[in-house]
Amino acid sequence: MKQHRITAVWLVIMIIATLASCTKRDLPLPIPNPNQPHQGGGGQQQPQVLKIKVQAIIKIGDIVYDSIPASFTLTSYDSSMQPHLLNIRLKPGVNEISIPANHIRYRLLVREWNHSDEMTLDRNNIQEDVIYTLGGAKAAKKMKYELNAVLVNGTYRAESKTEYQYDASGKLVKVLLFKKRTNGDVYIAATEDLIYQDGKVTESIKRDENGNEISKLFIGYDQQGKIKSFKQSRAGEETNGTVSYTIKNGAVETHIKHINSQSTVEHYILSIKGNQIRRSSVASNNINEWSDYGFDNSINPYIHMNWPDMQMLRNSKNNVSWTGKQYYEGNLTLDPVKYNYTYDGDGYPVSLVKEFRSAQTGSILNTTKTTYHY
Image (cartoon, rainbow, N blue to C red; front, top):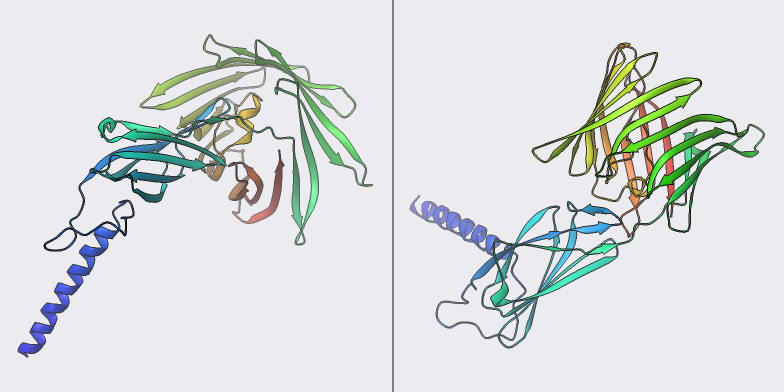
């Protein structure tokens, strides 16, 4: 019985020792130099460390992406200028990194979206209360066209093509929607022309396949360049819109009011970190809806196209990855429930498969696929 107690005690000690050694190995310390002699006495001495804060921030076009993961390499140099490497994956936001306090130089390198940025710090310049940001900037890619298809009997059938045309300075000036007739002929079903003033879209004109005007939209801006008003004429009906913004605890609340002879609709948008995580609408004719959204960490190509609309639907900097909606009154519509993206090396989506469900029954009704071409 005594021997069993001794064996159990030794087993507990071994487990504790194993857990302790795992904790040390999991510290983000540079790989030690195998040629460096060990300290004398009771084994290798654990080096003292400094804690620094690192964040990946990349500016794509005019949009800053400050909540992204990234590959990070730390090369630290000891007193003999022997390099020591540490490779980790940064989480979105601020990361705390342990570096050897007795080294004399540190090279920080961030890689993401086929882009890299680096800085070198001397030991005397290290500040533990500073957030070191790396990422730099690169130009935004322009989407040339997108193809949309629907799943029919296990095969995707082409539905439409949307083509985007830009002027010599890279501004979006025309959108063309192509569809296919029942006899297989491809035709331009609709177009949208964008007119600029002082670098901002101030007018949008939509036309049908025969060139007849469907709608005309005027956009007004405040002194900070944010949208403040809309005026749309469509089928003899004029709708006026006003936009206001409120900043609360780092979040942006956007209020949009549309008024015409039929109804008044108030839209509310809650944006956090550049993404519209909640939208709601309340109409005077009792058609109401609210929606929650989740987002990935990749680049939304639409926000770089400067393509305004009355509900400001293309204003998130990342791509929607899930939705959760509640419907009220008569506003029961299809709702995408599953998003499956693939991306290119630059961080842009190249395909999206969406499954839609019925708001009434919850059953899957159809599946669509969109491919993006840059």
